[in-house]
Image (cartoon, rainbow, N blue to C red; front, top):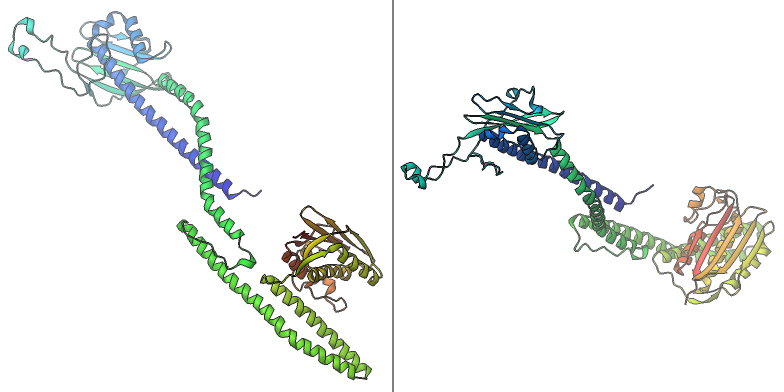
Length: 498
């Protein structure tokens, strides 16, 4: 199956856009995941600092763990690692998921310093590398107690990060250390990834159909825009005929690549025009040059035939006269063909009764044939406007071709009928089997069937090609229709004319 160039452009553009969107989606997902992981690390550091700097929160472990799950947006089944070492004589606080976990063996990254913790019960942004608040002037001067700025800030700590595995998934851990306590807080990335995937799926349910529709529309517009100059060139090229080979395509306003293509096409058209004109002039000049000497030679031979009384001499002169007649007929047909090629075939248009001409030719054919059956089915009153002499020559060529190359004992059928826009005439006859190669060369000039290359079968191989040119000069056409191998059907169509 042949696929159009526009369709291939559409498919390629769609694939390119789909690949680009896929790459952008993958890279965007990775970037978003990386940013979310960094935000998670910041929250873990923040919460670890809050737990480490407010050891009184360890008095109620269940409340502390519930508060952390709420702040970190974890479900009851999600793993949460909490290890708090308050310092002094108090024992460390361990969550259920931290039992048996050696947090000291994790590959902790270089420290990240945090400033003072946020107010109790509040949550604020992490304060990385922010220096502790400087004491006010009353504090430095030891002023009255009522004018002091407040208690001194807690000591600064440092936050370290590490990657770990929890419940078979990647996780992140934060360890916040102060001079008096240490807190380790970690949980899995699975809940965060699940939330992100759910959000992405909801977004894609709306965006994917829209993206597909926009991609298809954009690809089709791109293909149409790409094909627009090609279509202009195609339309211009279709307007170039053998009668208008002097036309050239304009390249103004076209892209550089199409300008090169138009220049190459115009160059080819110029060479073709020159060759066609040369061949046409040669045929016309040769026909004109041969016409006069052949006429003189025919006249001299006729005179010599009348003057001669020797039977053998008369027979030789008669054969020579027949050959000269054949050459004169070929010359006349070549002249007509050259005029048709140049678009200079003069037509004396009058109203022509095609039915009358066909009936006359069929009646003459019935008197000439002895071993073939000639039938006719022509509607009366078939009219057209054209050159009566050329149309009679056309019908005579087609009927003579059927008589000459028809199978002995075969049949010949001529039919004519009126159509909405013109007249259809079909010449059909039985013949020896013809293959596809022979049928493809039916209208070639000087082509004759394999059985017609002997002198016993009259003909020049120009009748069908001349008949088609006459039909085209009248605005019609002559075509070879599909038929069984032992049958030939030639369809002539002519417009009604005005």
